[in-house]
Image (cartoon, rainbow, N blue to C red; front, side, top):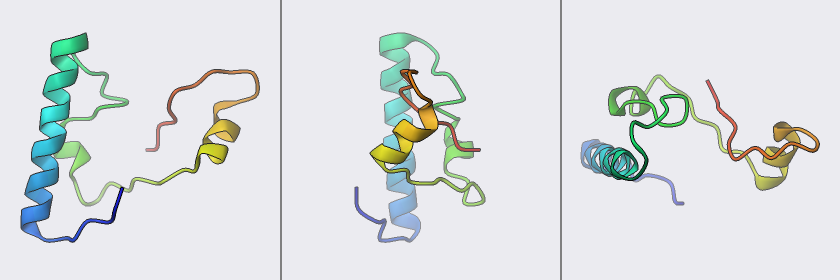
Length: 74
């Protein structure tokens, strides 16, 4: 992953890519869970803050002895 160059064109590109991912998920598994895959308008809302977590920190947050594939950030 690399930082976005910013701007309207990049925002539109990422929104299209995210929409494509949602459609692929739906085709393979059915409706995506909103806790993991929020709607495009929610995911691309600039007021939402998404936090990067290192693999080691993910293990720490997922709990001892638990197998968690993701950690939600709200």
